[in-house]
Image (tube, rainbow, N blue to C red; front, side, top):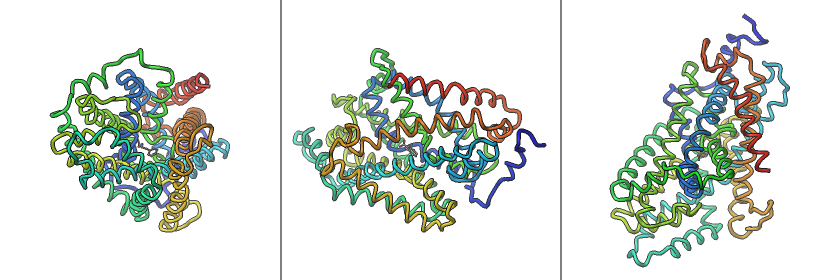
Length: 462
Ligand code: PHE
């Protein structure tokens, strides 16, 4: 039956030779590997800390439920129904629905976003590798009265001031990401994820158990879950929205690209709920691993980006088995960053492969090399080129702001409008199943809820 220009069967049959993963579980692991990253373990605790704890967490959860999950379903669906990279996926859908071919630029923007994020993500992931190394080799293991905040602060400053260490550590991280991506979707990514995700979860569980036993667990629970609305500002709502996109890896081509490898039969809504559930659980439990120790040591929960690298080493030096706990902690951050890094590299590689018919090896090599070049900008902006040349920010902060706040918000807005106004009902049936009651709700969310909320936030912030 031909309805609104495209039949369900036609789309279902549209399967260019494309590798897909073994089953739904692999997809869930890969997508949650993408979602769970430095955003959960490093950014979420300090952002929640700076924005008043519980009240921020509530707004963040609302953003995940009302905007994050529907958009996640949309992106997985866009990838799976076309089996293409983000640019190709938007091109095909625009053509099939008779929408303007320029919608493909939304896919293009998403690929640029993932590339730019990865260019500074590898630098921060390099910090984790470096901290894993120095913690494991006992650098912080000194008599406790001689380890003070000045020392841990200086250690962090010395790291940022050294282009050599930053370059070596980011190349080490980039090299591992490259090695996995270049080996292929099944032989590289799937295989690596099957090891990395369970290991990360195990370490996290062990850390929470330990931290709950020796730390001030009640204070942490109160801080994270007792809302104090007086601390909630308008700005924190914008931050919560931006972070919910970032943490679910939305508007950055990762979920569309991974969606294109998702097995045909798995349910998209169930899968999206599972991925968002795991991601949120990890963000909250990371808080429960960190804050009990922070409170017990009378440290500041809103210490900002340095929370992880300046405050935590003080604690590791002071608790029993601190060296082991500390190294496990930074190793876990590294694994979480690696599974996200893979998903940030894959969109560009898949695009080069499909667009120019290049081999995976060539596409991955070119992507990795250009990433390295661009990452030097971030490295130098932390030391020899630390100038506020970009609207009062250095390059690192500017890239972070531009991708997480501007590109992702724009991308999410455009994706919502595309799904709400351009996709036909039978294409949505592919997402949700033939008779699903979710279709009208999804359509309304994409048409009105997401655009209005994003526009309102954008206007008020201007
Ligand atoms: N979601 C990842 C994190 O929380 C970051 C990421 C963003 C990964 C966009 C892929 C795409 O760290």
